[in-house]
Length: 299
Length: 263
Image (cartoon, rainbow over all chains, first blue to last red; front, side):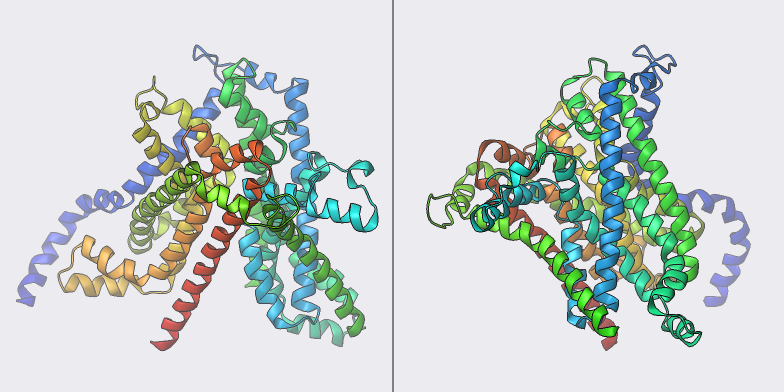
């Protein structure tokens, strides 16, 4: 019986070939249809809309509309917040990870830090804003304690949670943990032999970090910076809940535009969205390129 | 030298811990202040007694459930099929699943509103059910990067080619292979993707707000601009949900390690 089936299968095989190719591709059809309908097409629609007049003709007027002071200002604040929180997030996240991993602290702290980072990097959005209002708002815990215990009036010093500095402080709450989650495996990848080799050549601890560890970690540093940038740039809910709409960063402008066409011109909304895609797209392209370079060393 | 390194490490750790724990403490303390002059759980009672809270939270939990099912149905067969038959396509699929991290969610939902509005070819936003469906697809899109990576990592640990051939030689069809062989084997990985999806969907704001659905995120924002202490209570509840999801993921991965060691 087996012989029979083998004998029958053989002459069949070449004839089946042209039929099988489309069948194999059929397997990814549900995914392709879903991605096309709910991810790629909507995005393309926005991108194309940025170059179209309401009648459907080609135009660059929408993009030119981005250069109005209001929108340019919003992009500028957004870029500043994103660059600032990405840079500080990278730096502080690295210092914390290095301190816990390599600073001779108890091993239990390491697991605790990683678990907490997993939670905190997902604790963004509306509740995060509430937590900070309850802590550093006008009646927040820290504000009140500083006033009652030390006689310091935080808000008299010019501090305000609804400001560039306040937003930066809040965004860092999910940026730093993300950096810790990404950089910890990279720190693990630093081999002990490298340190020993450096030490046997007479290098000090600082020299090892400056001349061996940091150059190896550098690409993953820059790459994570790009990821954190995109992460902050697209965040809407945190800023909305924190500031209402009094701080005009790009996502909030776009949100208001979608809700009620405050910009008067719906196609300008397409242009704003297109600008966001371009910026986060560049940031992520940098991340992908640099990560593949970083992984070469850490294999 | 070693000593001072350790000292500085402790200082860095303490500062970091203060930054991360103070807002949690502040949030909790604030949520207890609803009654003047004493700590009480009044804010929680107000929140839990609010029919709007139950309705929106229930709605978001339900949406999270549907989103997880949809996500698994889309991701698991695809990841399996690509690994088995179309390995050349893997980078493409991986790139597509990472796109939701590149394209800001607000842009995606903007596209939905323009593409599926009442005057379009597929007027999904015309009815509540259609909008719910659109919202579910949006959430599944948001969770795509996490779900795909979780399932793909799970598939890496099993020999799907041998398993599939063994099942086929016993006469199993594709549905049987996927449902009774592959899914149980990557169940733990699927669960960790599912909990992450749950955490994302519960707190999500932009999609639900712009599609005008009564989800938990918009409810929280509405509370934030209308009440003083209840928002802090909501934040504590949301934080507990996130924490529980992460704990369940850890538990699931630990369970996986355990089963692997035993066989």
